[in-house]
Image 1 (cartoon, rainbow, N blue to C red):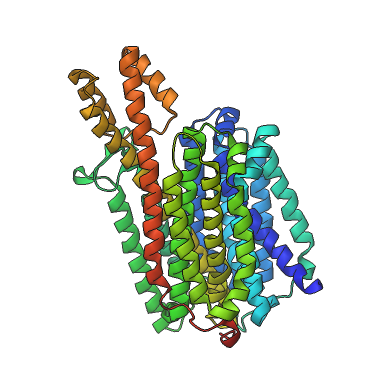
Image 2: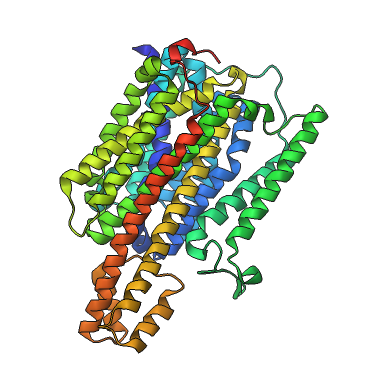
Length: 535
C-alpha cells in the first residue's frame, strides 16, 4: 500500500491544478458582485491564467531540470498556494489578476511538468502506466466535478472558501513530500536560455491570446476590436486576431532558429528539439491537444445550455454533469489494463469513438426541456471516452523519452494541454457565437410579423455579434428598446430558436473534431504496453 502514497500526493496536486479553472468558471456571477467588477473583467482573469501557463510552461520545465524536479515541485506548490491565498483575499479585480492569473499560473508551470517527471521516477512498467491513468482520472474528475464542488461551495458559502481550501491542500501536500522518491538529477546542471525563454513565451503568448480573443474580435472580419488609447485596431480592415497569431508563429519560428544555433555551438537550449522527432511522442502530444480541444469545447457549451437555456444554478449544473465525472474516473483507472491487452493506440481510438458518439447524442438532446435520461447517458459515454484517452496519453508521452528528459516532455505535455484548451474554447465558442448571430439574423429577416424597418434595425444591431442571454432577458431587452409586446415576443422566439440551433451546431463541431482526431493516433504505440513498457 505504501507504494501508492506518491500517486495519491501527485494526484491531489493534479486535482487542485485542474479544479481551479472549473471553479472560476462557475463562480463568475458571485465574483462579479463581490468585487464590484464586470463579467468581462473576470473573463480577462481566466484568459490571463491560460496565457501565463501556455507561455511559460517550457520555461517551467527547464527550471525543473535546473533546480531538480522535487525542488521545482515544492517551489511551484508554495507559489501556487500563495496565489490561492491571495485570490481568496482579493478586495478587487486587480488583486485577483495578480493572485490567480499571475502567481497561481507561474506556480502551475513548475508543478505540472514536475508531476509527470516524478511519476516516472516513482513507478516503472505496468505500475507507471496505472499511475498515469490515475493522474488522468484525477484531472478528468476535477474537470467534471469542478462545477459541482465550486457550485455548491459558491452557492452555500463563498467562492473565496474554495481558494482558501486549495491553500490548505497545498500545505498538506508539501508536508507529505517525504513519501516521494527523488527524481534523478542531470549530471550537469543546465543553464537557462533567457533569449529562448523570451522568444517562446512571447510566441506562445501572442498565438494563444489571438486564439482566445477570436470569439470576441472575430477571425477575419472584425466583430469587436483591440482598443488602444480610444482607437480601434483593425489592420487593413481585418480583425487583429490573425495578425496576433501570425506574429506568435513568427516568434516561434525565430525561437526554433535560435535553439538550432545554440545547439550547433554546444550551448544549453530551452528545448531539446530531438524530442519532437520521436514519433510516439509527437502522436501523443497532438492527440492530447485534440483531446483538450474536444473536452474544453464541450465544457464551454454545456454550462451555457444548462444555465442560460434551462436556468439552472451553479450547483444544479454540477449535478447534471456528475455522470461524466463518475465514468471518466472509472474509464481512466481501467484504461491501463485495456492498454496492456489491446495497446494504447486501440484504447485511444476507442475513446475518440466514444467522444464522437456522445457529442452526436448530445446534439439530439438539446431542447428547451432537459431530456434527463438521454442527457445523462450521453454524458456517461462522453466520460468514458475522455477517461480512456486520459489514461493513455500521459504514459505514451513520458514513456517515449529517456528518463533524463521527462521534465522536458512534461513541459511539452503541459504546453499541448493549454494550447488544446485555448483552441477548444476559441473554436467551439466561435461556432456558438457566430451561429447564434447568423441564425438570429436569418430568422429576423424572414419573420413577416416584424415590420421591415424594425427588422432592419435589429439586423444592423446584431451584425457585430450578440450576447448569450436567457430568452426571457432577450424579451425584456426588446421591450426596453421600445418594441410592442407582440413584436418583442417574436424577437425573443427567434432568438431562442437561434440559440438552440447554435448550441446544436457547436456540439456538432465537437463531434467533427473528435472524429478528425483519429488521424493523430496513427503513430501511437500499436503493441500492448506489457510488450513495450521500456522507452
